[in-house]
Image (cartoon, rainbow, N blue to C red):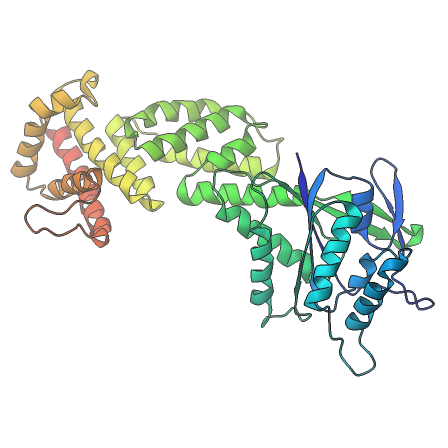
Length: 419
């Protein structure tokens, strides 16, 4: 798969004798070495990845001259222009790279490496009052990434704040994409070891994995969306990954009655010993175990009730309403018929509905009517009320669900006491 290389450049270190950027010897994992002034050159000449594009970020006064091949006499004028513009003179601050020279440098680098280059520049000062402006520049640049590209982020050069902001911009872009898509990003760093006078090429890609693990866990814990987490878990805990994927699907589809089968699947998955696995995997198992303990009940209506409360707690109000209504209907079916009629709409229409209304009216459980009306409003896309001609108000949802939940608990008690 093709990669986009994203790198940054700072002011760098120059030799006092000749005024040129210091050379460094980079050693790759395969033993190959490349002596150069800039790590980006080593990555490209070594063909570290199959690069299809390069994005280069720096300030107006970064050491842009370092990218010019000093043996190329035809570019001596450009090199001098960049060096003079980006180097301060005594008490006079540097002017910085001009837009014309930025474009010329883009063209030069694209021809030199036979890869399209994009250069973005920003103010030299990176601080509280400029970080938002710079972050916006980075995010706009990252937003132009091809949908199917992989990213290699080089964090070797540049001011230390540049790679951090770049890292966050890529995170921002990855979160703005489809939440179910895993955005492929790798990190690389040239670590200089002074006593050996060599820079070892370090693959820091696990750093991005750590971020993704945290993001996936947070998405699951906050919204019960376990699809991205399931993809990460699959190589380590296949049973758990499959159970979580199924849980996400029944939540999306409002298939509340299938929670029983999912609970069985989760119970089997939890039997696997993961104590020797990474912390994030054990954290995921802990969250799943908590859900199982919360939803595991002796009766199906009890399980559905606990499920609806969990959905409401996570802000999944639509799913919570439907699960709560199904919970009430299931309790009626189990009391007056058998499990064979659970989810049977014909039985509910011919018998269950009248029994339900009788219980509501006889025990003044009118909040159950409100709950059912809310379920119907959701099913019909929030259509206007036939009488008032008004649209239903989302602000009323929490109140109706709270009162409906209390009424369902009362319904349970009545059905249990009824002979």
